[in-house]
Image (cartoon, rainbow, N blue to C red; front, side, top):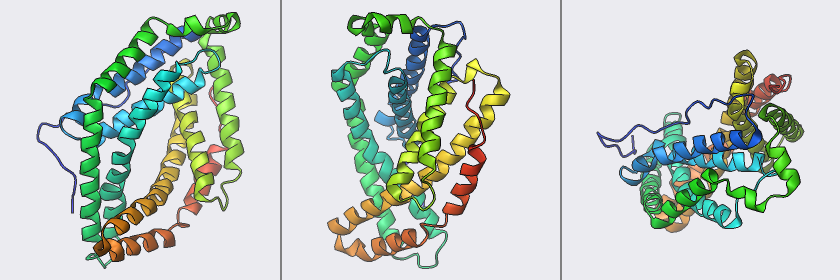
Length: 311
């Protein structure tokens, strides 16, 4: 059963465009290019989110936001986004996140279970209820992106970026670091991210959902950094590194989706007693399958560990 809402003229969701940095760029110029790339991805998906409530447009807008916040974190030692803008970014993330969680449950997690078990009947009303929640939350996301508050946020971010608003808040030492070559800055970032991921990954064996989530976040940040700086290094070095990170992130993401699904199913049970049996069945199924991905995850981790960060 396909619960996704589709329209014949739904625009194609827009992924991030390839980012080209020059090794001769300084840190400030590279930051502006990276931030512009993230903002372009966010803004390119506005119509799909507002007008069509498109699942993939929402997903790509959220990816753009995650990339943007990751970039801000990378450069946080040399420049800072004003607190008010950080708070507005947090608001936007909170408006979009719930819809995506329910999209995954209704459009991915539950269909996968229905394709694996014989007892379909208790799952149908659960999937329909999850799809209803997702649709309602897409309306919330659309309203947020169509709002004056969102437009103000994007406008302020673009002005801050174009006018280099961080300069007014900087110390002299920070200004010096902004003039250093991006290649040197990138090397330090990639090595730092690699070490953080390796440290967290040592605890993957028998890790609980919270520990796996920490590894997933570290893998995601490391991957974004590698993609941001990919054009500075030979493709034969970057591509295997990014592929290994993407595979690791994807597997950890599937495990996280199952963990999130448990909480969403509990919400459905509390809201509608008729969904308790179906929700309990799914939660039990997910709990029973919980350890099945450990072997694959360990293989992916062993594949990643010997790789060196580009640079």
